[in-house]
Image 1 (cartoon, one colour):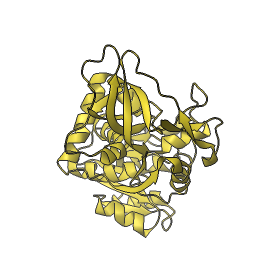
Image 2 (tube, rainbow, N blue to C red; image 1 turned 30 degrees about the vertical axis):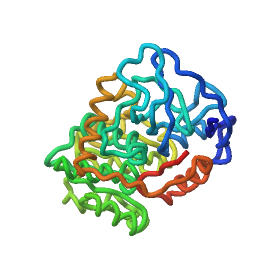
Image 3 (cartoon, rainbow, N blue to C red; image 1 turned 60 degrees about the vertical axis):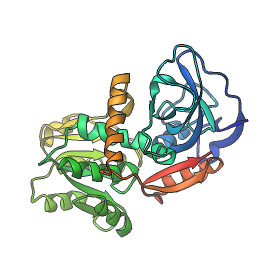
Length: 325
C-alpha cells in the first residue's frame, strides 16, 4: 500500500491531499524507491500554487528525498536492490514510494542518515552550485545572502565561511539573526529592525559593497539588492519567496554600475549525470567532514504536509523541514 500527497487543483495548502496511490514496476532506466524521509522546500509551494506549472494533473509535489531501492528497471546497472540513495528532483517526492530515473539518484555515504540526506540534497546542492559555479566564492569575496536563517541560508553561512568569504545575511528577528551568526555569517541584518538593508550593507562594508548578492526573496528585495553591489557585481536571483520580480528593465543594470544578473536553477547545473555526481559528492564531502552541519529543525508526518507549507510560508521555520512517511 502506497500513499502520496497529490494536488488536483493548484491553490493554497488545502490543495495538498493525502491519498492512496498505485506505484507500478520501474520501467527501463528507472528504480522504485521506498522513501524514508522527504525534504520540504519553497519550490514545493511554487508547484502547489501553480507558479511552476506541472505537465500532469493530479501531480505529486516534492523535489527531494532519501530512501532504499526496492526494484530496478531494465538497463540499470549501477544500482541494486537495497542501495541507500538520495535525490533532488524531479517532482514526486511527497510519497511513501515512488518511481524515479536511476540517473537522477546518487548513492549515500554510510555516515549520512536518511533524514539528513533528505534535508540537504536540494538545499545543499543549490548552495554548492551557487558558491562554486554561479560565482566562485573564495578569500576576499563579500556576499549578501537574503534569508540567511533558512535551510539554504544556514548551509551557505557555513560553506562561504569555509571558502574564506565574508557573508552578510539578512533575517527576520533576533533569534534568526543569532542563528545565522552562529552558523558562520560575518554579519546579519535584522530586516524587521533595520528596514534599509542597503544602508546597513554600505556601513558594514565601509562603502565597498558586495561582489555578489544571493536573493531568494524576489519582489520585496528588488531592486534594492542591486544597490548592495560593487560596479560589475553579480545579482543572483534564485527564488521568489515574496513573489516574482516583474517588469524588469535591463537598463537598470547599466545605471547601477554595469551589473550582471542571472536566474540559475539546480536543474541546469546538474543536467548531466557527471555534474550531478560531482555536485552531490562535493556536498557529501563537506557534510561528512563536519564543515557543513545540516539542521533538521522541523519534522512532520507526510499526511501533515499542508501544515508544513503553512509554517514555511509564514516564515515560522528555520533550517530544514522533513516529512516522514
